[in-house]
Image (tube, rainbow, N blue to C red; front, side, top):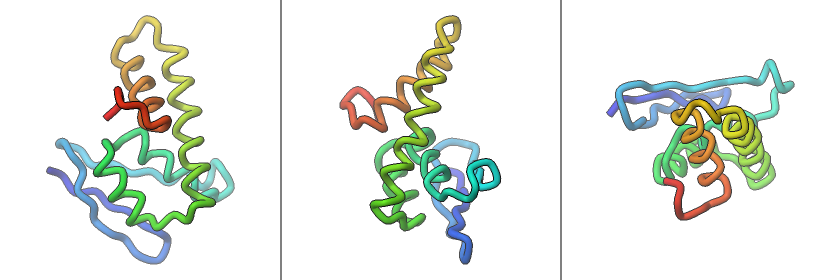
Length: 107
C-alpha cells in the first residue's frame, strides 16, 4: 500500500492509499481557495473506509463536507455524460456518483 500526503495548510499527514500510486490535489487557485474542492477528491478517489480517513484527517466541518460532495458529483456527472464510447471513464463517473449519493452499488 502506498502512502500519500494530506495537508491542511499548517501540517501534512501521511495517509495510506490503496494501490501502487499515491496522489493528491490542491485546486485552490482555480476555485479561490474553497477547501471543499479538495475534499471532492475523497469521493472520486477513495472507497468508503479510506475516504473517511481522508476526510477525518482533513477535519472538514459540516459546512465544508457537504459542498465537497457537490464538487465530486459535478465531475462525476460530467465524466459519465461524456463517456459513451469509453467504458473505463463511464465506470469512474458511475462510481463517483454512487459514492456521493451513498448508493449500495458503489464502493
